[in-house]
Length: 294
Image (cartoon, rainbow, N blue to C red):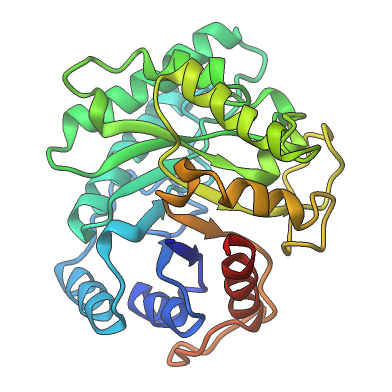
């Protein structure tokens, strides 16, 4: 299985690669630029691409197991035209950097409808995805991440995600898709923790409604209670989800075929730029997921 982490990238994304490999990961997630900014005008420098790809090759990690996470500030669902436009431009640039790096996809949070109409917000998100894949030739995909549902954030249900993806023209549709975050599923009140059957049924529901399987799984326990809408990640087994539901999910053949990436808390708040060692929590969580996967 492709089990990965999102390491600290102090010193560059090539150092993030080496920290992921040191944790025993076979996949990873990175930021292509600082996630606190729109980055709609930021390109990735050729020398940065070279260092990243060299680190991937030397670490034995495949680009097909590398996922880019888009900036947190992008709100493609915003009812404010200026914000939505800037977010759409930022998403397209995110895909451009993803393609340049050679990663298989970038994922993003759709954002919040705010005081606007949710149906119109779904259309705005889908249109932003369509614009991005139309503007950036190549193979890299744009993947919508389900949300925890707080503050009228869009993409909580498979129906909302399906509505977004329906806005993508058929010719471009293979380059768009979605992924699931376990903390977000739990916090939004979607049950996969009551039984193995519930876990399989939930994946079935997303596949049936959207028409395809998820392209990645973010493996995070939840600090918040079921249905709390709180997006607060916890170490696997240290939150409200517990360990057994992860065993059930990881047994599903659709999950075993995709990168399963941990976004759990790190033990170290800061890391030296030249330190390639793994975060202790990442090492422990990779080992835990491998044990649960059997």
